[in-house]
Figure 1 (cartoon, rainbow, N blue to C red):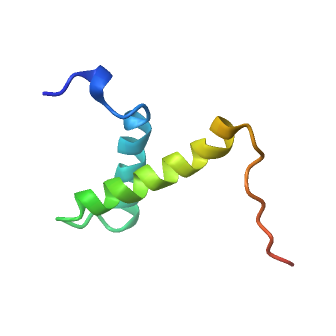
Figure 2: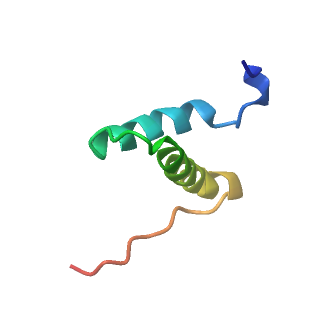
Length: 63
């Protein structure tokens, strides 16, 4: 088992997000890596504006 300190700084959030993605996708077997990668991308994207001090990206959809 790996040491907690060796994990990605956002590992718990990524794990939770991957589980949510897995459930949303209908709980398919054999897609754990795909769900983990997608979750990591989402969590890291959310953390990016906070880490850089910038404002979050705006949604420019016109209504």
